[in-house]
Image (cartoon, rainbow, N blue to C red; front, side):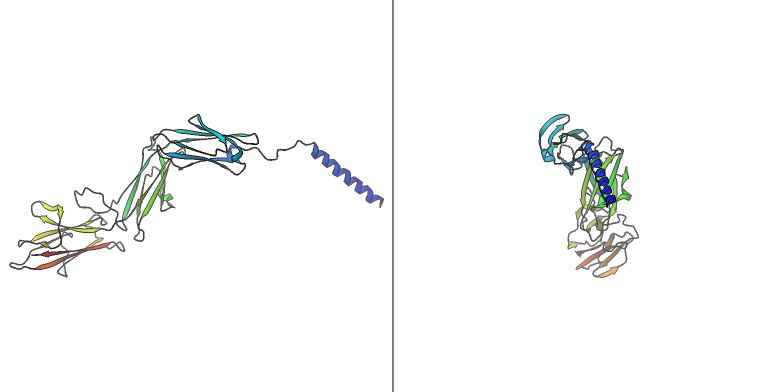
Amino acid sequence: MQKNIKSLILFSMIVVSVFFVFSALPMQTACAQIQAGDISLSINPKYPRANETVKASLSTYTTDLNKAMISWLLNGTMVISGVGKKDFSFNTGNSGIQTSIEAQIDISDGSSVNKKMIITPADIDMLWEAYDAYVPPFYKGKALAPPEGVIKVVAISNSSSSQGLIYNWKQDDNNKPNSSGYGKNSYSFKNSYLETSNTIETTVSSLLGANVGSGKITVRPESPKIIFYKKDPILGTKWEKSLADKFTINSSGQTIVAEPYFFSPKNLNSSNLKFKWSLGGSEINTPAIKNEISIKPEAGQTGTSSIQLSINNIKTLFLSMDKTLNVSF
């Protein structure tokens, strides 16, 4: 019994000693001071264009910024200051002109944090071409994108460092790492017959990692079409005027040219393209020049008939079209 009492007294002395040791230690702050890395400074849009309104915002999970005194500086000049001023809107300058924004944050616990960002706006122009779509010679318009056609999108930056940029491409929100990288300012793809449009995006950055800009463009495929023209023996194809239905063929005969606008490939002699001509419902042999047919009525014969043309790209599932021209003679 006496032995147990001695053990209890010894234990009590140890507990009291430990209490006094911990009491003698300096009191620790209830929460650690806020560091610059604890607060995020972000802008919207993420890639501003020249002369665009931008919203800068502060956010953190470690303190209540609504109680902090926040001052915003634009290019070194204080613009706004107040408690809880977490957001700040400003306008960027001309393309290539740097804009400096800085937030001076005085936390309620007495700590201070500065966040700074340099923005260099740049305009990224996005252009596309259906570079394997057919248009006739001297056509002044742009070749439209055919279904299942190959489209090339080019990003043009007006940044002074446009020769040393990194491009990250997306198609319909899907990253395209194999097409992205240093100096890769173009992206090519083949659209699907199941899609009514494709949205192509790129974000552009410098070798040092600075954001340069971003661009987005939507490409919508159009249905190809066949247009018939008359071919003059001396002047050649009369592209200035297409042939209307019920065209009259003179007694000496006429050569008719079919132009498959926006069809792919643009090489009409490609083995992938099959032309099928019919006259009055009866198929005829494909002419030597696949998109031309010569017709000469028999002497003294008059009447009406129809010329049908069907064009098919055998390498695709649905790229085909046909057109009928009714003629009289």
